[in-house]
Length: 92
Image (cartoon, rainbow, N blue to C red; front, side, top):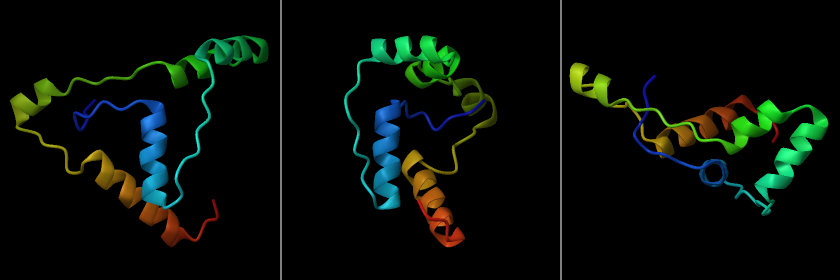
């Protein structure tokens, strides 16, 4: 796995994606413990843990060994995704 080297939380990712889409994310604070309880009650514990957990990728080895550099920053990738979505004509 490779990454751009920028660690970002789920709320920050949603905010950045909202900015790229031109419709800011309106996030409401919700205690993670409540989400875990709801996940257990609904049988969706695995999905909740993926949402709340961290995914960090260390691409240091491929960067060193192959001199790899990510082709886009996170912001550039989100902007390209937003532009593609707009071109497809899909409604949000």
